[in-house]
Image (cartoon, rainbow, N blue to C red):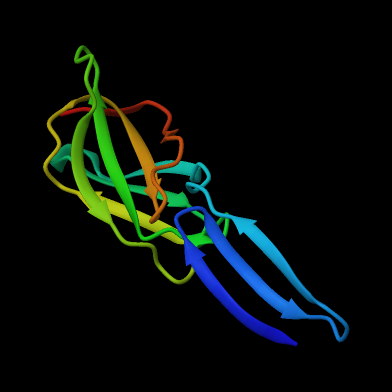
Length: 131
């Protein structure tokens, strides 16, 4: 029989009675896993319109993903530039769309966040937008 559970900074502690004694089980929470299958679709390359899609876990190590950070790296620039924060969708495929990119060579980076912290980034392949 279930007795109580408590969420702590490190996970859940579940107390239950198995019929003869009270037992406890703890689960460890952690940051989310890396998003997967990052892909870029050039919708209108001449206008700089691009869609970045990725698959991400809705739940990761017992703590749900609440946002993804989308970042951009332009060829010749050594620093990643923050673009936007995206909330997960119910079908596990998330996306970010922009129409403000100048011609150039780009990479995109996606980082998942939950209440514990951030997971490792996933990086797209190279995308080239021409005039």
